[in-house]
Picture 1 (cartoon, rainbow, N blue to C red):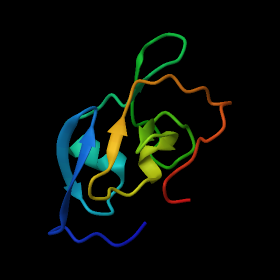
Picture 2 (cartoon, rainbow, N blue to C red):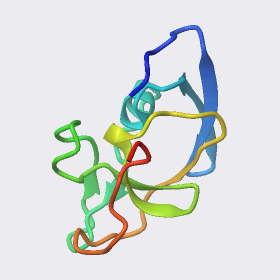
Picture 3 (cartoon, rainbow, N blue to C red):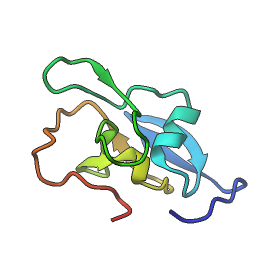
Picture 4 (cartoon, rainbow, N blue to C red):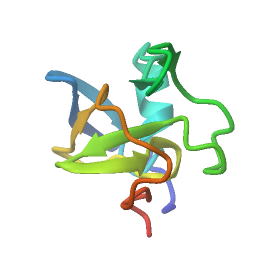
Length: 102
């Protein structure tokens, strides 16, 4: 990820609510800083899922960003105008699981 400039805040949307984060911090960190702990729900049990490993190994932080499903929030830098959605069940075997940084 790029260097952080803690004076450069950007706006992004999560589940139709506008939040602010520091440009280039991870989306997971920005959501946590805004009090968001649940990023999605487990495909089978329906239990809330959120940040677990925060280094891209576990895939628990998968969200949909700008219409692209299966993006790991812990590896994706926050950018102005991002549209982030949670809740869509995504199988770990489904293609497209990635990070915006890739």
